[in-house]
Image 1: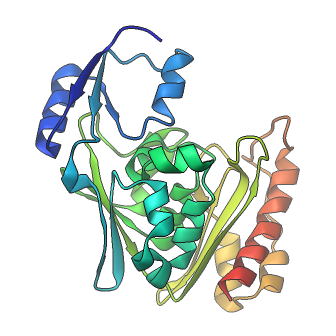
Image 2: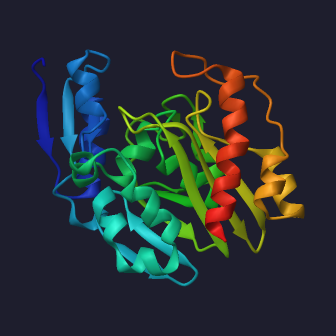
Length: 263
């Protein structure tokens, strides 16, 4: 590790001002940022700690949506009676993130702001058509994710909460790397009053919607319909864990499992 300055913000306004002034990084749960700093992949001179900002934490149901504060931990989402009752797919997703330490430190907002290509939460946000609230505006899911580790957030912009519309049916299934527990391929399927949305994580450089699967499941929301879709390998990741063709094949397989789990 190297020397840096730590600022503990007490309000969202204070945190945003500190980021604008210093050009530093916001510190949420630190599960991604601290690791990157240790490897010198990130070297901010200032960290703005968000852990003391009470207004960024909490879970509540507002109308037909579940609203979760940005600093709410994965473990809290997984254990929430409100989430389990209204959106069990999201609770199950949170329960499957990393290990116990990661779930007790990592946060919803931190995961989304980092936008790791294999993170689980981006798939839920995109598939459910969630709205990301910041200290400046509201950003729709389709506009929020821009690419690998890239989002629509400005340097001094902070996620304050995320509003998840409650779907008719939904499920998330991931084919995980047994060591890291990141998704080699993860698929979140959501059937809503506005149609079917399917988001894929882990397979490409960033989370994306699978239009072919959405079209097939819009006609027949069944596992067989998902299995019948042949995904293109173009743009899929290639590494020691799997070829582009392997990942493309996995998407339909995992999507079928998600549809079956959604019921």
